Length: 263
Ligand SMILES: [Zn+2]
Ligand SMILES: [Zn+2]
Image (tube, rainbow, N blue to C red; front, side):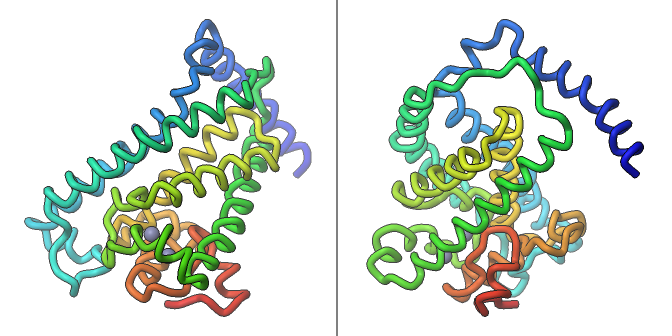
């Protein structure tokens, strides 16, 4: 077993090192540009939402697509103007809040790019550790939002205007909520001590899983079907419908443990 895993590491390591060197080669100025993280985060969010916009359009024609919708009894998918309104709201908050805050953070921490790429095992462990830590911090944050009426009214209520959410709504939240979540994600990578490559992979996965949580579809190939420890869209949509329970963003163990799990 040890021999196998060490052989796998040896085969994987040059691949990551080659990729890392190609990314670093002559691109250091661009990679360390303070506006890059938030710009890429917004772009990734929109790209991840695009397939679900296509599904919403196809749902008008294909019964199979409609059968994947979780809220099949709650009417048709959101119309294009709702997507557009949400896109403008998210873009506006990124330009006015997330972009300046994330740029300031990048300038303050002035990151450096190490010469060595992480090993595959290091990449895997760091990303998993970040996801678990972010999930824990988010659970505490989200639970507090719903238990303290002042916090709910002033920070979290905006996100709950979508009783039946759709992909873009994953980031349709108040400025304070977006800033808090940015801080939780950055703190998770900082506590774990991530390699920049692991950090990028964590942020991309985090963004994809948030989109999946809000997409409104229980797709046969969704992540939570492959990994039963994840709640996925049915889990988070129940939270939007009930306005309580299912406080963790991805995993279900904290909700099971503290009795806040809802089917
Ligand atoms: Zn909530
Ligand atoms: Zn939500």
